[in-house]
Image (tube, rainbow, N blue to C red):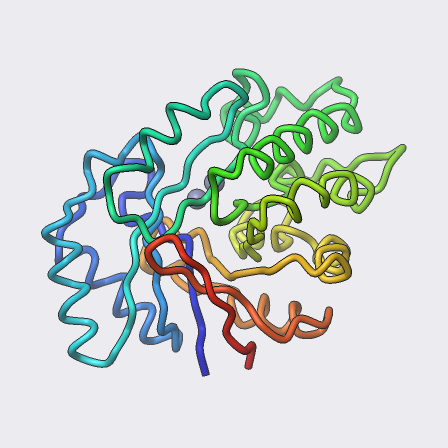
Amino acid sequence: MLLADYHVHALAHGEYDYTEEWLYRFLQAAREKGINRLGFAEHEELVERINLTALEAVRASAQKQDGLWVGVGLEIDYKPGREDEIRNLTSGRAWDFIIGSIHYIGEWAFDHPDYRDGFADQDIDELYEQYFSLVAGAAGSGLFDILGHLDLIKIWGHRPRRYSEADFVRSILGEIKRAGVVVEINTGGLRKPVQEIYPGEKLIEELFQADVPITFSSDAHHPEQVGSGLRQAVELAKRVGYRSFMVFEGRRSFPVTLT
Ligand SMILES: [Zn+2]
Ligand SMILES: [Zn+2]
């Protein structure tokens, strides 16, 4: 059986160092969870702190020890107008995958605990609309292999009223399909106030009906979070109807059977 976690932050938000010893702890956690494909995806602003020598060392030893595949990617914030900057960031290095995420509406870091109050007195439907139009931009840019936490806007539990969340996802399926971008089933939401996988089950159903490929991730920021909730995510995807998911290598993706 193949189990993958394609969104792991060894550096978290900068509080840890990218050493061999630290990376081994993530690999060990992956093994304990039965994961055989582990993708490190640092936040873009920490790209200079990725120690390629340490990465290559753990990659080679994992390959030799038990065939655990270790890949490297980035998680990048999409904003309209950043396309060239993003292209520069992702060229010139052998990335296995690039995740495109929306953490900002304008300058507002809506998912950051310090700025959570920004939701007060706002029209939630309008926020959802702004958020999903940014997601559509990320998908349509063609710059990303994976769309990160598709419905992150629900992080603190705010839900739209006039529209359903499925309406918003349906409105961007065209961009997702045209770009051929993969959507991650990200268990990080289980550890947030919303306590729900990104995207939620109804949205995964919309993706399945539209034949959008998926992959799996924990968004771990610590070894203890590697693979957390992943079995639950796999069961959810299977229940919805998915029979395969995508894995990535050298920015190419290929499907594997969901078991
Ligand atoms: Zn993120
Ligand atoms: Zn992340």
